[in-house]
Image (cartoon, rainbow, N blue to C red; front, top):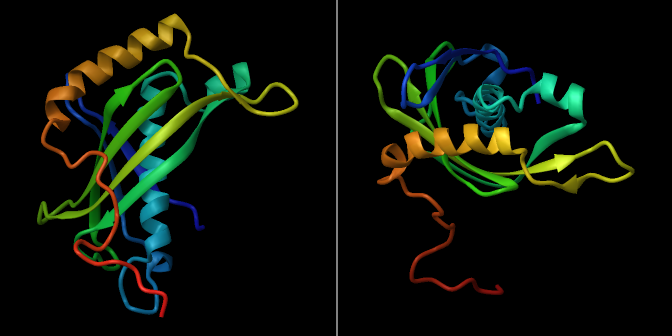
Length: 176
């Protein structure tokens, strides 16, 4: 995957963590629009901004050997975007427990304000310092930051389609 160029802007108060990007020429596929892998890359860079706000960024990993892994993801594509289109990504902490974070992201065309895509992630807090990575609980200090952000974001994500599955409604898969 190519490097994603995403700027960050942390909105004060209880709002989403907001990131910006511009669709680069090398993000375009043979269909003339942004390739699906580039959506994942842009969302990944945006999630890093929220993780840094929680003190879970690269310096945390370097200092402690702990980090987060994405263990589940659900991406939707609502509108295509093309080269040079400006993007704005809103990242929310939709929920958390002692080892996991539930993130929900909405990507908008920054000029038209049209919803372009959504991404929902389940992240697991892991310790990589041993011979094998293992899930570990957040520290009490991290738990406080996480609870505060999740509480602030809770009313904002209430009407989002969290936990939405994938499938064909009213149809069964056929073998052939």
